[in-house]
Image (cartoon, rainbow, N blue to C red; front, side):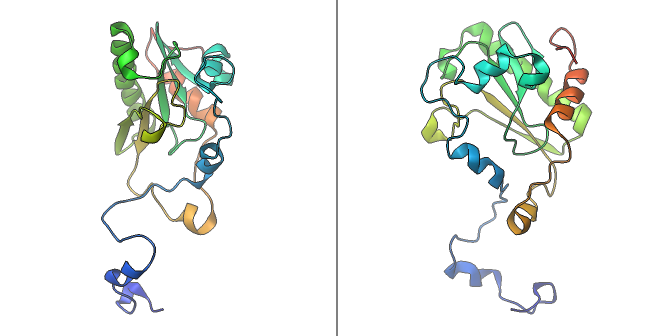
Amino acid sequence: MGDPSTGDGPAPEAASGFAGTPDAFERLWVPHRMVYVGGEGKPADADAGPQCPFCRAQDAPDADGLVVARGEECFVVLNLYPYNPGHLLVCPYRHVASYTDLTESETVEVARMTRTAMRVLTEVSAPHGMNLGMNQGEVAGAGIAAHLHQHVVPRWGGDANFLPVVARTKAVPQLLADTRGLLAAAWPAPDRTQP
């Protein structure tokens, strides 16, 4: 195989015979999440309690549960299996699966805390953009379908780099506890937790 940078190599359309189809999608490959996707740490049923990681996080001391901020009806926690550094989850305290089951005040607080999470991430990490998302149901991609959570994922140009593919390594430049400390310290009152 030649050197594609000199034009001495296969044309992109030559890949059409391989698995997958060339397209314009950028992929954020996160193989470290496969442990979780395989079921580790997932609750066995839809009941609230110690099997639910979000119920455990809200009941733990903030630093132990990686809780960044607490509101009246919702809290913000770091994702244990982040797509990117600073990947936050906004969760209601109440163990509820569907967005349509939230109360009006929970709905407002999820929205307000999502907006604040975006502001804090911008201040602390200066991402180039963000993905916001809520997967409703396991078939829609929810890893923990039984406890609603809104993803706030900071993104940078080039964050879908080659390291996970060639070295089976994801570059996460900071420990989760350190990221949590920075974000919690930057979170505005009255939703600030104890740093």
